[in-house]
Every structure is written in C-alpha cells, then in structure tokens.
Length: 117
Length: 111
Image (cartoon, one colour):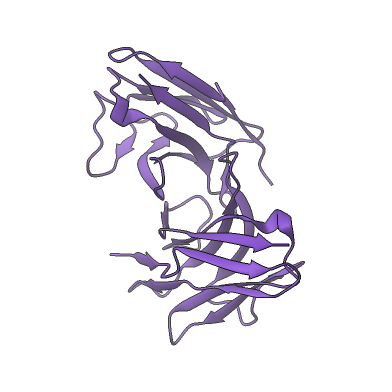
C-alpha cells in the first residue's frame, strides 16, 4: 500500500530564508507521481509542483523546487526566499500511476509553515 | 489546466438533514474524485466518480451516506446524508488531469 509521511507538523521560518519541507513515501509501483499542494486558511488546495518517478531532473516552478531522491524515497519541497504569503499548510501527495486521471492521490498529514517577519 | 467550481462554498446545516454539493469542470474528464478533510486533518478520498457507472467508494465510506452522481463528463454531485456534527468538514472535488486540480472546496458545518 502507498504511504506518504510528513514528519514536520509545524515549521517557523524567518522571511526571506529558504525552507525545506520533508516528505518520504513508500510504494512498490515503479511508476508514480509526487505532488505538493499549498492550503491557505481559505481551504482551497493550490497545486505547486509535480515530479514523475521517471523524470531525470528535479522539478522546479518559480520559487518552488522538489528535491527528489528516488533511492531514499524522499521528495522534499524547497521554497526559496520565503514570503509572508507562504504561511499555510503544505501537503505532499502521491499517485501510483503515471496515467493521467487513472489513480487517486494519497496525502501526507501536512506541515504547517509559518513565515515570521 | 482544468478549472473546477463547487457549490455551495460553505453551508451550515442542522443534524439529520442532507446537503448536495455540486462540482463542475470546464473540460471533459474521465474520473472525478471526492475528498473529505476533517478539521485539522489531511485529505481522505471518499470515492471515485466515473461517468456512466456507479461510484467506487473507499473503505469506511458507503453509498447510503455519500451518494454520488456523475451524469456527464464535466459534472458530479456528492450528497452528505443524514448529517451529524462529525460530518463537519471541507469537501473537495478533484480531477487528476495532469497536475491534480482541486475545486475550491465546500466548508460544511453541522450543528
């Protein structure tokens, strides 16, 4: 069975510093996708970044990058130059298929990130 | 990218009543997913809605409590039946169209 683990319930970071949110996963399927979402207090789920298991390079989207270490089964999110607006819950999720629309997402427990001015 | 809308955005309901949540996607998708997020918790999949067939429910969720309709490739509804305060949650629909898009959610409070 798939499993996603986020070991940091909460993190506090000074504005403009970089922050790394940890995520480890467990799956026996060689084909999978990893996602990071941001959930502000409004409750909406905002897609941040995606990494496929066969992607050769780490995914990047603006200030977000995914540190994908396949052998260690980790997919940490790195936010560079943090901003006050980055304060939110962050969820790591996995899909155990690379076929679009084929499979559900399994979520980690989330990390609450607070950016201090 | 898919644009997903949900109605209502929030509601306060009395115990024992039912609420139907609508989810509309701006493009045709094969599968739509309904998730529940209880207060302070992560997201849990309720069911997968396929057009033209019965929804597939996850362990712990039953059709009598959460009936789902999927009349076409762009629309689905989730009904929360015979509600109790334990059903107070955010309910989100999703389509895994490449990047796993979610609707804005329905924040339900049951008194």
